[in-house]
Image (cartoon, rainbow, N blue to C red; front, side):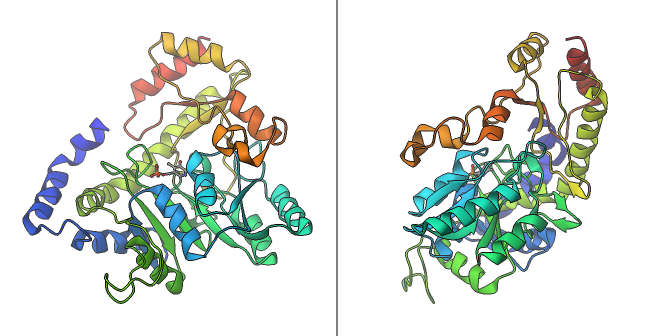
Length: 366
Ligand SMILES: *Cc1c(COP(=O)(O)O)cnc(C)c1O
């Protein structure tokens, strides 16, 4: 983002220069410095940086020994990576429909789905991956008791929600373990790929550090498990340290912009603004609205030079990659109807008042 780079360019260049000077490109000192700051920010004991948000989701599944015969529950209305890692680990992704207000997993349907899988007796329910979609935390106070009842772990997919809050608790601390992404377009993005895993479980954190470097034991030529090369780059950590310093301010800006959007479009009968439950703060990765005549509205916006994007046009149960699960249209009706109606307005912390006014007036003139 150009406006963000303008704001902190000298600091970023100095940070990169420092890495070039010390030359510790792999797991250099900036990695530890960043992990300490990320753990503080998320209010957890351990933050383990890694190569992407996808690996941040995969590593905990590996640490929990998820594999064939296991069932891991998530929603079909998310980015492919959430369910992809379940299949990659050898387990079966079991989809649960979303809540129509929050677009996050519906806890009641979750409990039913787990009970059904248990009664069928073919798969072992092991974990739940709630997704904090568009930046809004899922309903963890409803999800955690269900996980506890069935002795399952909760892996928070916080790729879009880092910087958000749920009832005063920080995103990253809401499950047994959490994964975020530093892909450039996420609320806290670096200049390449990256991610991090968060947990208070010290035993799990040790396994994650081992998995990140080829399953290392006491040293890197002692390998005690199958792992990955999933390290975060030192240069990216150096960049992210400067971005993290301005991140709280950016989250406030996103919330201010979201409030302005909601106030100015709530009178439009053809748009449904996002509903944020009380006691929750979204990180506003996206500002997503629903419209029955989505194509017309997007077309009008385009004529005024305003870009809008659809997240997500096709729920995962209908994706070719998951055709082996044999799902059919109609199985997850809320996800399907949301995919038909949703689109996102421009959202980033450097949107100016005049840009917001232009977007709002374009919507008002439809
Ligand atoms: C972006 C994203 C991921 C994957 O992150 P990458 O860093 O791109 O691998 C996973 N889950 C969700 C919900 C995402 O939005």
